[in-house]
Amino acid sequence: MRPGHALVVDDDETIREVAQLALELVGGWRVSTAANGTEAVRLARTERPDVILLDVMMPVVDGPATLDKLREDTWTRDIPVVYLTAKANPEQEYEWVPGGATGVIAKPFDPMTLADDVSRLLEQVP
Image 1 (tube, rainbow, N blue to C red):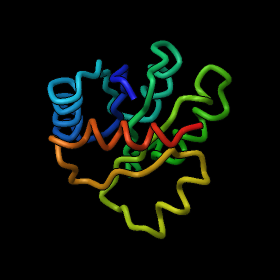
Image 2: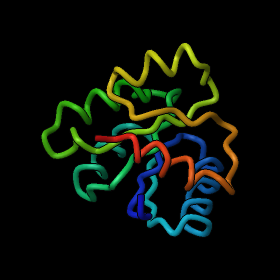
Image 3: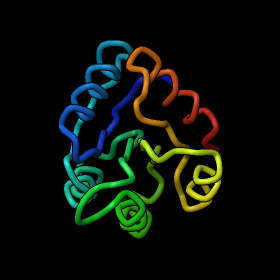
């Protein structure tokens, strides 16, 4: 997939910054960031990114609850969502993907391959 616009959602500022730099500088993506699920839903609705990279474990509104809100909204329901999580394992990935996520990228991720990893997952989207 050609680089487009990504929304990175993580409550950890360092993760947001590293992901943003990796996607912009290495992958050529345009990147917006959000620190929580509520902000992510608002930005997804107004900016319509090509993909959302979403942390699973966040305070107040976690990743799965955020994904549910995105899927309930006609403006955001078709945006591919890739979970970014330190909790990734093959069994959980199997559970998350049917829940509406396009895939999972484990943290810590490799900044040099993050853009390629996102593109690879997006190529699987029908």
